[in-house]
Image (tube, rainbow, N blue to C red; front, top):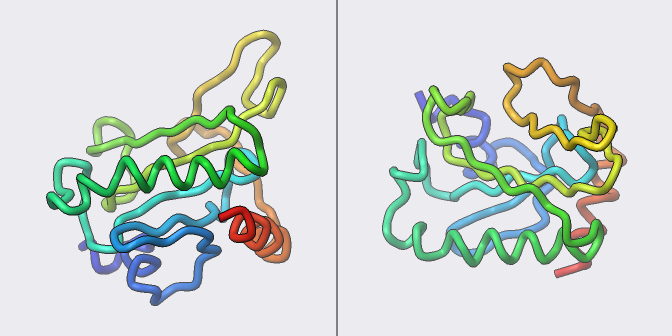
Length: 148
């Protein structure tokens, strides 16, 4: 059930998150197990399981929200940002709530292997994620808020 989903609870602000962007339709916050520093999620305030479940208002606001969050991240991390959504279980969607990952990237970050950049986002890959402290997340969140 979507009501039990952690992203649903964050959208309803029943669970605290490190939110640094909010508009009428979407919020963006830091991932607590990021792939790289600044890894953020963008979610709709109103429940939708996949991109195909977004209502017309959400659809129209999505591009602007992605752009606005990426602009904030760009100010701290530069222009290299991977933006990813998996819609549907077979695409690797592990949480039944529409969300977009925005992952700041840089040459030779932890996703580089020699001259090749890996693209690993879903948890099923087994790729070890980072575990920053609450204090680090709060510091990054504050910095990102100040970039708005």
